View: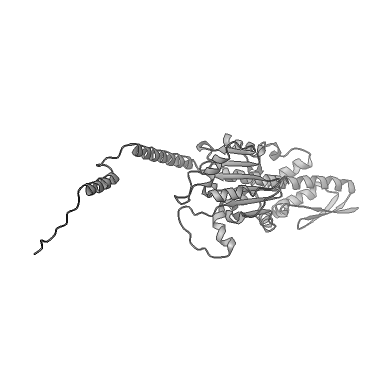
Length: 355
């Protein structure tokens, strides 16, 4: 009789053992010649050497399955022990799995173009309206790279710009102050990585979330770097960000040109960067549209309505500028007419005759 310790690395032991240790009891029943004792993330196995070698190999397959798909069912355990493919293994085109086991993959033609552009280029710009999955899909690509050990860390950033209203001074330390701006990024990560593991990764700086202002002076190597809401960057900010790229790094820049929250006198850095970097080798640009919206069906209608409104406003503005100004319908022309009249008619000053 020999003894061996099997360590369940990178997975949540609670998920591996199952509710009320149901998975663990099932594993014990599948290997009757072995005595299996679980403590934290370590399985202590005693018994027949041949049976132990088989159990060790199959338990490792179960661990990898849980790591990859974020789920492990009794049916999966039986399939693995029998040497069959699990249901999840038969699904194609999946980037990662959510913590509920739901497959995350492209849901439209342009979303697939984003994935393809990421594979072919080191820098990708994804531009489109709200709800097209730009940020979510980008984070899924980054999480996949981390799980496949293609990258050592994920760095997520976005400019700290309020959407139309000023939040003023926020309480707390630096993390408390910037977290409200970065919450959409946390939401996506929490959907793909179990909470305990995500917390551990953030404490070890494997996953870093920081405002754009903190990027100056850094060189980002061996990482997947995502800049979200890039339409709210200034020209100087996006230029600084794009030049942080180090070796073995990929960058994804996402933005929506219809949601620019910068002051009117500031030009969007994203708009400028797309114009300057057009045609540069190694940089891909993917434009997503209304057909790619994956939120509630009302979101598509809202986006369409606002686009129609913006188009009508732009056409009205162009027509107004093209039409020659007349005294009857232009306040500016009226003011100019008055100034011309004043200049042509010298003012008279009433004077009292000298006595």
